[in-house]
Length: 117
Length: 107
Image 1 (cartoon, rainbow over the protein chains, first blue to last red):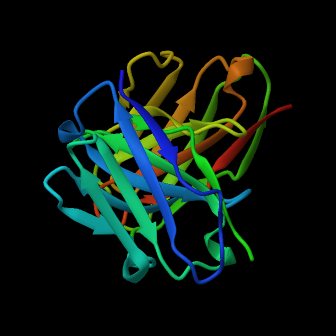
Image 2 (cartoon, each protein chain N blue to C red; image 1 turned 90 degrees about the horizontal axis):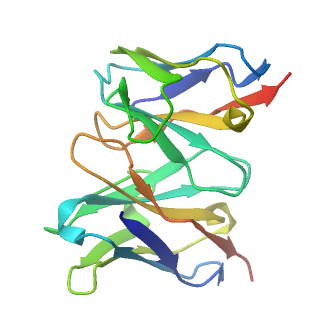
Image 3 (spheres, each protein chain N blue to C red; image 1 turned 90 degrees about the vertical axis):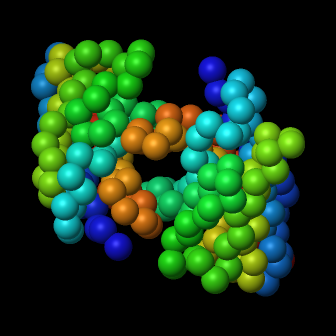
C-alpha cells in the first residue's frame, strides 16, 4: 500500500517561500502522477499542481507564477515550493497520488502551514 | 477552468436513508470525475473514480452515476460512519477542480 508523508515548516513569514516535501513509500514514485492540494481552514479543496516522474508538470494558473513542483526519484520524494506567500496561503497542504485514469487514490495526512510574522 | 457546483451544500438525513448528491460541471467532464469523503481533521478518501467505479474497499452502498455535466453520488442505507463532507473533483482537464463540498449531517 502506498503511503505518503508531508514534511516542512509549519510557519512561514509573509513574502517568504513555503517549501514542503512528500515522501513516498510502498511503491516506486515512477508509477504515479503526484499532486499538491491545499485546503484553507473551513474551506474547499484547491488543486495546486501535478508532476510525473519524467518531470512533466502542470500547475493551477491561479498560482502558476509562484509554484515550483519537482521530483527526486532517487529519494522517492517530490516537493512543492510556493513563493511570495501571504496569509491567503495559510492552509492544510496535502500531497496525493493517482494513476492515469483514476482519481486521487493516495493522500498524505496533511500538514498545516500558517503564514504569519 | 471547469467549475464544479455541488448540491445541496448541506444535507440532513437519518440512518437507513438513501441520499443523492449532485455535481454539475460548467462544461463536460465526460466520466473523468471522482467522489471523496472527508471527515474533520482527516485527508479526503476516494470513494468513486471515473464517475461510477467503486474504489476497492469502499462499501457497495456508495454508487456514482452520470456523465458530461451532471453526475451524482448516491448513498443507500446510510450508516453512522457516513456522516461527513463529500467532494466531487474533475480530472478531465487542467486545472483539476473540486466542488465546494456537501456536508451530510444527522437529522
